[in-house]
Length: 309
Ligand SMILES: [Cu+2]
Image (cartoon, rainbow, N blue to C red; front, side, top):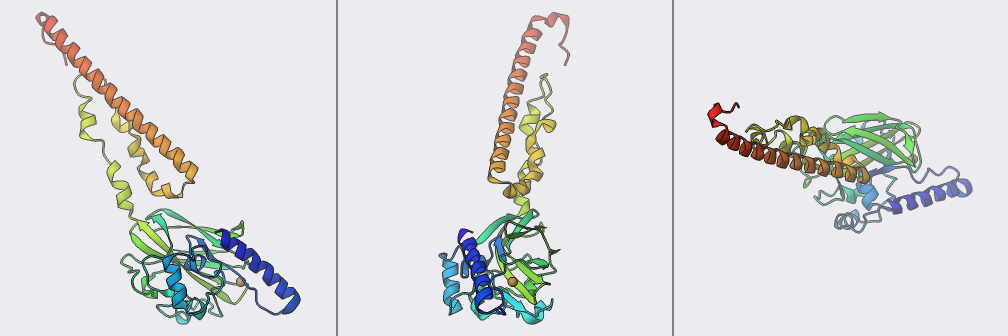
C-alpha cells in the first residue's frame, strides 16, 4: 500500500505540475483502483505493491512492455456498454495493451482471503476523485481460474454503488458476498465515472472460505455434557450457558474484525471455553459427590425406605 500511495502522490503532483506548466489540455495522469481486496493493477502494475511475486513477474513478461500506472486502467466513451467494448478473456486489462499481462489465467495472483456470506469491505484508491458508479461483480461458483475470465463467468453485479464516500483518499464500499462460493474467485470492479468519459476496470482475486465449514461444528451440545447432569446433581442448563452456540453466527464475520478486536474476541471465546470446562468439572464432581452421598445415605438409612429420586 505504501508504494501505491507514494506513487499516487507523485503521480498527482506530476499531473498537476504538467497540467499547470506544460500542456494545459493533457488528461489527468492518475485516477483509481481497488487496493483492498487488492487488484491485479494495485499488485502488479506500475506503482504496485506486489510486483516481486511470481504472478506479477509473469504478468510483466507477458505484457511485453512496461505496465501502465496502477490507477490508470481506463477506457473512454464506454458509457455502460462494457460487454461491447471489453472482449472475453481481456476483462482484467480492459483490453488495453499496456495492461494485457493482467489477463493471464493463473491460480497464484496476489489474493485476499474472505468468507462466503460475509460482508466484504472494498477500498478503492481514488488518486484523482471522480463522480460515478461502481459495479461489483463476483465470478460464479464453478469459475475456473485456470481459464481466461469472460463475461459469462460474471452474473449480474452484486452491487451498484453511486458516489460512495471518499475517506483518506479512497472510496469506501461494502458488499455482501453470496454464501454459495468457495475457492478462488474474481471480484470484478467497474467504475463508470460520470464526471469524465472514462470507465475503469479491475480484477481483485479472492480466496473464498466456504460458509458451511465455519458454521458446522457448533450446533449441538455433546451428549457427554447432558449426561453429567443426570444422577441427582444440580441441573446445569448447558444450552443456555454454551457460548459456542451463541458464537456461531459471529464466525463468518471474524475476518472483518480489526486485529485487536479479533484478539479480544478470541480471549472472550477462550474465557467461555474455560467457564464451560469448569462447569463440566464442577457438575461432574457435584454429581459424583452427590451420588456417593446418596449411596452412603441409602446404606445408612435403608431401614427408612428407599431414597427418593
Ligand atoms: Cu481520472
